[in-house]
Figure 1 (cartoon, rainbow, N blue to C red):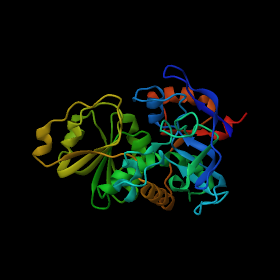
Figure 2: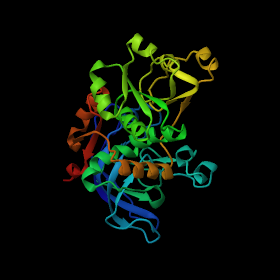
Figure 3: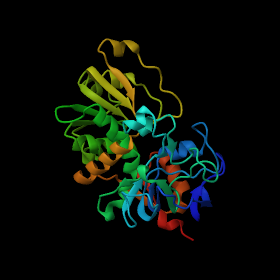
Figure 4: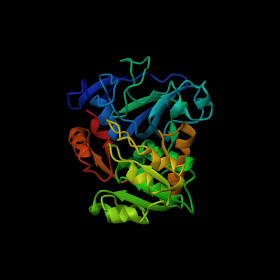
Length: 349
């Protein structure tokens, strides 16, 4: 089936309208009319070949929400008309230890929603900047938020699970002091989720102007990280720090704030490495620097249900498809609160 999409044919070209082909649904497939697709910084990194291995044409987008329009004859969990989502992956081996534990995101053969191997034309997956997608039932997620919130639900499929998973893994909850570094697409979700989990949340920003915004999102305290006195007031006090910044920076400034046995988890993915951290800062208090990447399918469904129960969605700016290049340039400058979302209805005709 031929559908409209937005993508690019090379790292040096802007995004443009293009026609792509989607397979007809097989027995285990769910066909989804895409209503909205969130715009993630990863989209830009991959499409511009700032991350290695980009295949062209590249159609980005892995924060997908829409309505089921057809299902294969072996599909049991979804029916035509259901509101559903698709996140960062559309396949995995389903044979390894990670897949068996519902951690498909760590499967060595995970297939990403775009730029992953597939038998479908053109030989690699094409993402959600498009009118429609066909996905195996196992990788489709149920949306229970009110339909009126659907556009703001889209970023939960990446920004939401990217922050939810480490917060859950490191047992964030009541009685824990949690820092969130960066107040952007990821960070604003981290603040909302940690607050809903019952933690004492401290937001870190380089900008004085974001202080009030962070409190509105749910932060109990806000620290301007360029202010040495404000940083010193929190030394050795955090159980957990979620670092969402996608640019290289000095990690020591934040590991110093951890208690003994505290952990800082990195979820921002800079195009070039962070400066090497000071080892003694870690070993003297058994502190850890860790990483986390999205979440498995069961945990992503858990996150969506948690957000629906607590009324959590992303703060978004809805855009037309033909505004995507301007939106990318604004995203690079941090000029969005806090996530762009494409209205897929504007891709028609």
